Length: 166
Image 1: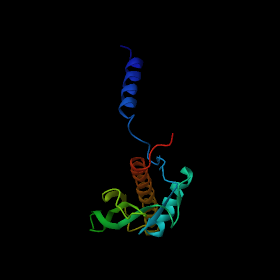
Image 2: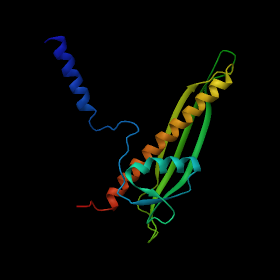
Image 3: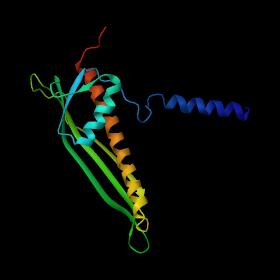
């Protein structure tokens, strides 16, 4: 076989293997017209509102469905040290536990769901300004990742609750 044919075949197999995956940042659309978000930090709330806006799902306090953020945690740790024992790499972890509740009946519509994201970045004690800027960007990435995953999980839960409109 020609090298070009092998390359095309290999790329076809790779694309076929990835067909079930979504691009990071791609969200599904929930079937809810609105949701109430309870227990979330302001930063998570604003990210969720911004993420749901394109689908037309509103976030307000009178929705028939409540997304209850049971737990929201940040963790920061030193992942590696340099030869002088100073921090050389930091690891940030952001996690939430959430549950969907029917406002009318107070029925819990799904078991608690856990979402966690971890990111590491190089830490330079000699350049604290650049390091703090990088840490802020990593935090933003973690918030975006958790937001997209939360919206996708809400969309999945909505398909199990709200019948498909015909």
